[in-house]
Image (cartoon, rainbow, N blue to C red):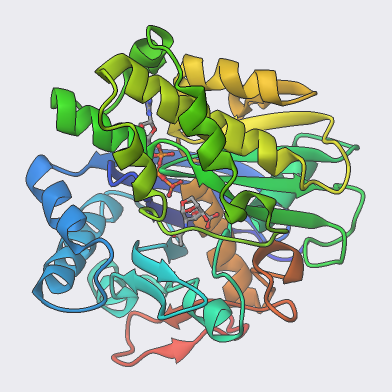
Length: 374
Ligand SMILES: Nc1ncnc2c1ncn2[C@@H]1O[C@H](COP(=O)(O)OP(=O)(O)OP(=O)(O)O)[C@@H](O)[C@H]1O
Ligand SMILES: CC(=O)N[C@H]1[C@@H]2OC[C@@H](O2)[C@@H](O)[C@@H]1O[C@H](C)C(=O)O
């Protein structure tokens, strides 16, 4: 094992709920252990600023959102001591890998100065520049986790965030960038459309526990029309922008609240079912992470789609609220060590690629990450 370091990862995801931060001990290949974690929810004002910048590529909304992202991260990350380096995901504001690219905001150079630690950041842009989807990136961490839990057969990890993403892992391979080790892609919407609907209609952040969906009736014609979209038949890799399926949100607009959220929940669950059809072999189990695993209706409906055990990652001693933050701690160490963070099987990039920018605290300019020593 190479030198193990203490890395702090931070994630601000498509749900716009807040910033997760978590410490991981790793050499960038294997996990040695987990450390403390924290969460800083966005205030409703901060969330509104972020929301109004979604889908924009520049302008005052983007500048304001960038400031929120940097300030909130500086606040939460300064509360962690004894950390060797930081993996800062930042915020995706717009994502069009086959078009205008991907917009990742939050300047790691500024954070490195404020936090006096090396910061690895902007993990997605180089992958997109090289023809990849730029997402999902957690799969390389999923590979390490699969080994950490001692799995010996292919399994799948499902993240239910604003958007859903699925990783099929073969733990018998030596390295995550090897052909056949990982197949990963976004499945469809997970919570984002449901959250938007709950906020619009009821002024609350989410369908707590999936209780409202459970009381509703699914409109099968809307679900079937949704699943007929070309995205679902498309072979992976493939990735999504948060609001790519906004038309589905409009399609349920005339349904009563419970039926509308039930229909969105069914779409998210059935999209996972479609995703499972793209796995090279049937996974022996499906480990679920991300906030959507707290939605028991969504979990029950996903279990109906999967022909294997569906279990929250907690069943294996992991923390599904912090797994993405840990992933960016892990990826930061990989970037520092010059190890790939994406591969043809995860983002469709032509060859395994080391993504990310490294900013040292004493530096005022950026330098591309390339195996620099700590
Ligand atoms: N108790 C709960 N009941 C229902 N839904 C919940 C619950 N807790 C969390 N969620 C859902 O999980 C979402 C947050 O999930 P998570 O933090 O994994 O998303 P994210 O990291 O922002 O998104 P992404 O992975 O797409 O980047 C919330 O917006 C909410 O919809
Ligand atoms: C472009 C972008 O930010 N994508 C996110 C989003 O949220 C979930 C899904 O869509 C996934 O592709 C990705 O995040 C996770 C952390 C990833 O890169 O693995």
